[in-house]
Image (cartoon, rainbow, N blue to C red; front, side):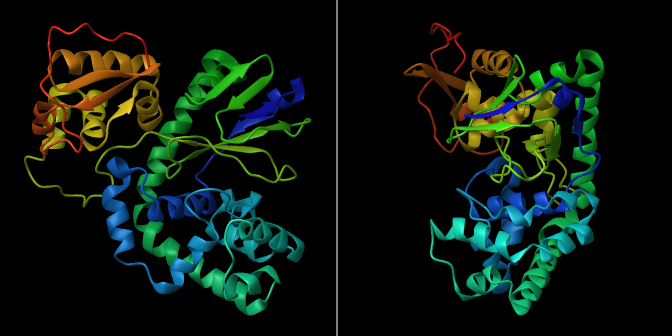
Length: 344
């Protein structure tokens, strides 16, 4: 559990970023490009990117593995000022910071020759890093940047409205299901335990298109405090602009509504608990419970208890409604079964 400790001065200095940060989007998209997460939302994008990656771009995965620590110097504070400013800050990273960050990576995996040269601040290695980051951004992010900006602006408007209605504390309390605000402390679900004392520095909230499932932050406590959090996506965002007529996803959205249709699509690909689905779709657990109840009554999903939680999965009928069989097909649905009411 990560715990951010606020003073009254910190609450006054909470702010929401005004534009997407290219360096954070670049880093987090690398996690998704290599990992298995986010198939429902990012599947078409993953296939496009993986089919075009050069051997040189693959070197970036050594700096940004899909699990564990990624080099903090890849997401410098000025990154929100645009790609050029972000790259300039990366290339100006002090040698001691390069050594420290790459040393942390080396604890999990022995670095290659290029990474070791980078740790020493070798000019040739830095030029190669600059070129590779630019190539990757042009391939994976630039074609979709207008969509990234639109989704970012939509999420930012929600945060500003929440701040207008409930103040900073009200906005923090509704930011994400994995965040909890209470008595001057903001806790973030995490595999590690760490206390971060803001000490008057405030906190930057950064909505991110390529942040998946859970909010994240920097490891280095000396850097400006930031929480990067996921935003909601439209399914099919990475598809060509003109989709074929009769797309079953659009028909399903017309029939069920966008949230319920997107929930069913997620369950067709892979089942999940109420909490997992809330994090995936960036909605509240109560909303998931409401929609899963309706889908269950219609015979499109089935819900079973697994220990203290409940697990939802699509039925064959649900897979057919979504245009494909469910990845984990279920048995027949007992429509007279006692409904599960406790959220997972």
